[in-house]
Length: 243
Image (tube, rainbow, N blue to C red; front, top):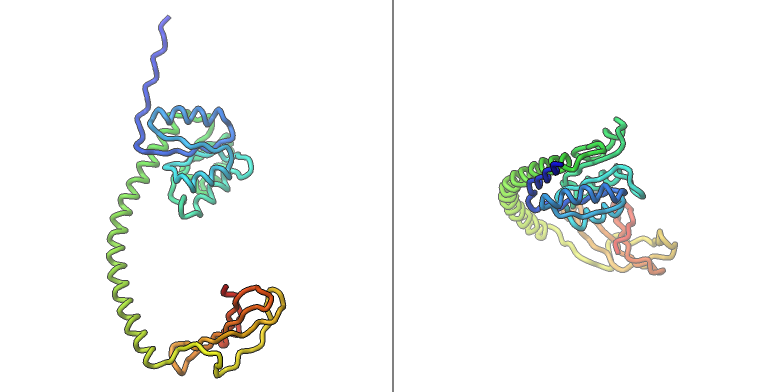
């Protein structure tokens, strides 16, 4: 009886870390074993909350997730990953057992780059991961060039703005005396803490604004009940906590 030919090892992925999020141990093991043969490092999670935590802490090259997860489902996981600045650019592959058209569209809307249906062969998953990571690498390289140009433009702009701000500060300093005082021209009102209804104790006032003609006054208080420091702006008559 002729033996089966051994399956060729998949083409390696360069420095890739894949996060596999699936409640099913067998599915994670199948994908993990195949991706490891492609020199891919593996991180695993069994539910959405664990997947989110590991995505933020490990910053994987790609995230592979099921939609039906305990605790936090895959749709919500995708949405949160896309909102977080640390994970929003990570490619996401959804591999789901749900063939419902609305669920597939839901996954894409939530942030999935690719949606694959189970049963999905591991070689198909690897092919899609390779395509996504290569595309991401190209975007990063292109973005580096753009960022360098922008950095130069921003540096020049900041230099111009700083010179302008310095001149403006000098002009304002000559034209308007900004200062701290405990005897302001406009008396500080008696106020009550909005958090505990205890009296607010007046401490000082800051006189500022763009000019003597358009000066402003901010009064500072401390809560007698220990709620913190509050600022009262005379022009708008608004009170807010600052410490």
